[in-house]
Each structure stands twice: as C-alpha cells, then as structure tokens.
Image (tube, rainbow, N blue to C red; front, side):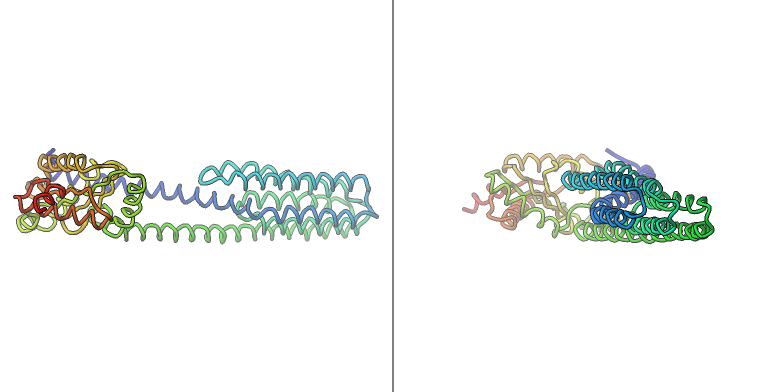
Amino acid sequence: MQNTLQDHMQDTLLSEAQSQREPLSNQMRNKQQHIRIEKIKLLYLHSLTPIILSAVAGLFLVAALWTSASHQHLIIWLVTTVLFACARIWLMTQFKRANPQGSAVLKWEKPYAISLMAVFLVWSAGLICIMPRDNLSAVFILNTFSIGLAGAAISWYSPLRYLQMTTISLALIPMIIVLLTLGHEETFWVGIAACCMYVSCMITSVLLQKTFNGNLELAYDLEQAKKQAENLARTDALTGLNNRRAFFDKAEPLFAYCKRNQQPISALMLDVDHFKRINDSYGHAAGDIALRNLAQLIKTNLRDSDLACRFGGEEFAVLLPNTNAEEAMGMANMLKQLMASTIIALADENALSLTASFGIAENGDSVEDLLNHADKAMYAAKNYGRNHVMSYCHISKQFA
C-alpha cells in the first residue's frame, strides 16, 4: 500500500494532535476518579475509630446529664446512637469483605454518605431533644459536645468536602439556633461565639481539603511518572517494541510456562537485508522510518500471546509460545511476503520495500539457547543469499 509523503505527514500531524487532546482529557478524568476512589477507601478504612469513640462519648454524655435531663429521653437517644453506630460498623465490615477495586469503590460512596448524615442528624437533633432548657450548665455541656462533633468532622471526614461541611453544619447550626433563641443573655453570647466557631470550622475545612487534595494529586503524579519511567526503560524508543531487557524479563516466565505444560515454543529472528544501503542512500531518517514501519507490521500480524522486541539495530526477535517449528516457519514466510509487498513512503517522493533474513528455532534448554539457535539459522539464511527463511533444525542436520 503506497502513501505519498504529504498524506503521511498529514496523518502524522492529525494523530499527534488527537493524541495530545485525548490523553490530556483522559488523564484528567482518570486522575480525578483515582483520587476520589482513594478518598472513599480512606473513609472506610479509618472510620471504625470515630464510630466507636462516638458511641463511648454518647455514654459519657448520658452520664453527665443523668441528674438534669429526662432519663427516658437519654436512654432513647443513647440506644438510637448505639444502633446507628452498629449499622455503620456493619457497613465498614461489608466494605472490607467485598474488597472492591477500581471504579467499583465508587458505588460505596453513597451508602457511606447516607449513614454518616443519619448519624450526625441523630446527634444534632438528639442533643436538642435531651437538652434541659432551664439548666444552663447542661446547655453549655451540650454546646461543648457539639463543638467537639464539629472538630471530629473536620479531622475524620476531610477526604470528601461535602461530607465534612455537611457534618459540621449538622453539629453546630441546630445548637447555634437554640443558643440564640433560648432567651438568656449568657446563651446568646455563647451562640455568637459558636457562630464564630462555625465560620472558623468552615474555613479550616477548605484549607484542609486543598492540602489533602494536593497531597493525593502529588502522590498520583509521582506514581504515574514512575510508571512512565519504567515503561520508557523497557521500551525501544524508535519502534515502540520491547527492548532486550523487557524481552528477557517477559520471555523467561513464558518459556518456563510452555516447558512446564509441555507446549512447544519457538523463536523467530530476522535481520533486515542491506540496511546500511538504506541509510547510505536515503539517510538515517529514512532508515528510522523503515524500522518503524517494520515494527508496526510485526505488531499487527502477531498474536497477543507472542512476544516481540527490537533486538538491536535492524535485528528483531519474536518468541512464539505454543508454536512448533513448522508453524513458526509459516509465520516467518507470511512476514517475509508482507515485507516485500509493503511500500514504505520516504521523503522526496522516494519509496522502498524491505526484505529480511529469517531464522527459526524450536529446540533449546533456555531462552538464550533458543535465541542462539534462531540466530544461527538467521545467519545461515543470510549466507544462503538473504531474503530467506531457514530453520535451525535443517542447518543442524546439514552439519551433523
């Protein structure tokens, strides 16, 4: 298939522009989703302590108000609080048992939010119900507990801002309303002070959220940079295939698997014929274009289970699991024909097609042994006149 240089340049520019737009938007979406997933995980993993502490705090609060408030109201409120705490503990255990991964974690956000809102609603409404309005000491005790609830909300629920701000509001606003409308000068000024505390809590929550998000974003960026660096270290920059290091790292377990399961495994090595002439005649840029085209042809026509790499220079290696020598020979002949029939467009309206010498090997006690046999067969193909496919089995018989 022949392409003009102009078409080739236009396609390249369009694909580069699209690859710059799409990855940016995809990266942002992936980043935001990853951060949200991490936030939900943190909430579930670290919520057991505040749940238990809230139940214990409720018990001490009832003890503190036992002599000044209705026993019936206190018991009803305490039982309700404990029941909601148990429900949230059950939710935490269900999350741990399910152990969701990836986007599945997002489904657990709504149950967490609903249960948390219900608990804070019970606390805020309950404190108002059990409050003895004629006992200012009890009122101030409950106000102190409300401020403590708001502080707990700031520290424990900072991963999700809407949860943090809603729980702060549920903890303080009902108490502020009561203090401002109770009719005592003391409670009025305490209510004003509580308003200041509410504003302070909101400002603090915003600052904590920014810091928290910044830390998660930094951790995500560092992890992505590490993955990218590892990928670059294992990928041939010119062709996008595995480099030798990555090839051997992946080939060893693949080879061991085939041997363990008594499956055949073959190696295919190819070396582009007269590649130096291409560089001398058209320049090294043309040689790079030729190698990229050849790498794309190899990737397109291999199976997902096959393993390919740029072995060095114009030499390529392919590991073919569950493939005997005859099948590998068929693969090599197919690649040989495709290379010959593929026209590669170069600058100045030049074009060329490639040929290569192929070596096939099936027998070997290790990956290195298998590749050495394929390499010997490949050099035999070169000596035979190039643009040939040779099997190590055949040349070993000749020299036996």
